[in-house]
Figure 1 (cartoon, helix red, strand yellow):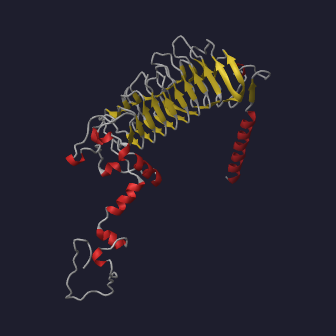
Figure 2 (cartoon, rainbow, N blue to C red; figure 1 turned 30 degrees about the vertical axis):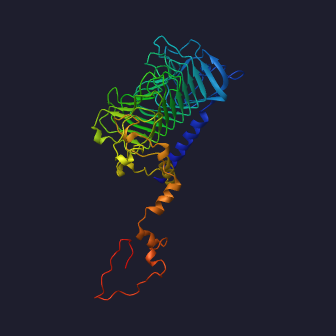
Figure 3 (cartoon, rainbow, N blue to C red; figure 1 turned 120 degrees about the vertical axis):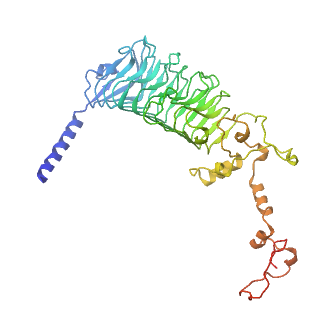
Length: 449
């Protein structure tokens, strides 16, 4: 048995080495073995690496059917300009093979009669895109439905994609197993969405997703069928010319995916429209919003599932770019000249444990902390920021610490003595009092007599 296992190990190692040795590197470009990327398509085998020299390849459209291909632009980005052509009425490149990796490629100008021409049409299982640039296509990337497929987009840029009918987008991910978008920049979609995904599981991490000041895009993030979604660490911005008043939409076309958990954490979300909703959630599971910054006017979350009492929207920092509304909290007459402020219950004002002590105090000195109202405008009631004159300062805190303590606390700390006993040494009790000794009492000044 031991010899048999040893033989199997040797055979497996030999097969792995043989497979690695059989993978070839095909070089594409002027003066290379293949003048254009599509010329290398017929010669490529599973597992090959295609290196495309930087430059523009106009009208070079094709379908890649091999598995485990790695296609890389070298010496700079290789630019695939559709120039009015398409592969199969679908895209510049149609990726039909499995486990494809594409790096450092630029796609532009994709148009088809159906008005959804894409830089890449993904039909195979599993795709990885790194450092690619999709612009001025009818769709940046468009994928089909594949329950086993996982797509990773990393360090890419999507700009000005969309036909302009609201049905084509910077990126449109179909019903797949998992979609990850990270370290990327999606902006200026033409009427369509900056990010749209129907995947069962979505990880949208540390991206810049923006309509920008002059953009006309719709949703910044649209997850129409819900799923398990993790929107973490992004800068999300809606411009004043947006075609839709909401920024993040979840399960608005029906919560049909198996999971329905939405986590929006550590994001900065900016609404330059002046009204609307930051998050729209139509799932029956309460969304989790934690440690986000919401800047601009609008409702933080519109959740159509559970009642407001079960919505998890506390621990949020809310900023406003405009003056507070006229709604104020009533105060006693002697404070009529002091700007009204509203403090949330102590439990709601607790800081997330993820923030360091220094960060908590820096923010505490500069901004008020309030549990957001899910229906109140950004500048009213509990959602109002502190006015500059009401910000606490280190000097005020130090002064308050020395003046607000009781006389007894100051006496015990050694910083203050009652005038009656200031000239006498402090008494020290070294033995227990006698059983019939009188019981000491506290005077009005707090001293023990």
